[in-house]
Structure formats: structure tokens, C-alpha cells
Image (cartoon, rainbow, N blue to C red):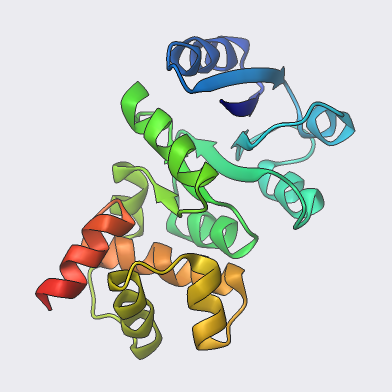
Length: 192
């Protein structure tokens, strides 16, 4: 069972997410919070945190930074995904970025992906990031290793990069290729 915490200042959003995820046989919402400080003060253990970007007082990106590297995997959640915020969140260690217009199935898939250590971008987030463009040489290296089925940790070790840097590169690769999963990116790498 994947244990999930939800942090959003809107009760209806929190409760809706809890209902959607609770209907999945392998997901359980173990706690809900209206603010970042509530999450930071909590002793409830979870595998994945869904964290709203725009929280009053302390925004989600600041909460993400304060959680630190030993925290559960964090999926950022927002209504509007600006490319700068998506890149900043991935660079700060977020496991992915999900827009609130995602379907319940997309949200559940993103939680599962994050739990497995896979960068998860909802289709709308990937679309917000994609400016098209060619892959940089480093992004091509990352794509090649994605094609070999390597995890972010393994890619980081192979390329001698920080795992957070690899997450950013993976997010950029997904966006530039217009795909939403590592599998789709690996298929694209094979086709290249």
C-alpha cells in the first residue's frame, strides 16, 4: 500500500483527492494538511506527498526545500504550471509535477510513478514545459540511458551528476519529446 499525504489550502481539493486516491486498491491517503507548516510538523509517515505549489504563508517550493533529502517523494500539485516553477521544483528534488486538471487516473499513475522513483509529469505539465527544441548533449545522454531502463540514481552515477540534476534533465527530455513517461521516452530513444 502506498501511503499518501495531501497538502492543499482548499478543503474541497484535499477531500476530492483523498476520495479519488482512496478508491485505488494500492493507494491510501494517511493525512491531509491545509498548510506547509502542518506537514513539516507532522510525524505521520508517508511514501508520497502531494504538495500544492501555491500555499498561503509558506509556498510549496519552500516546503519542498525544507523537507530535505530524507523526505518522502514529493509530487507538486497546482492549477497553473509555469515552466520556471516546474523546473525549479524538479531541481529542488520534486518527484514530479501534476496539474489539477489531470484526471484521477493520471493522478494515481503519477503517485505510483513517484513512489517507484520515476519522474512524473502530467500531460499538461509536460506540455507547459515543452518549448520544442533540440535536446542538449546532456539531455541526449540522459535519454540514451533512459532507453537502457536505468533509474535516476543509476543515470546520476553513470554521468557523475547529482540525482536532482538528472530529474531536471529527465523532465526536460519528456517535455521536449512531448511524452509523459520514461517508457515513452525510452521508446523515442530506441526510434532515434
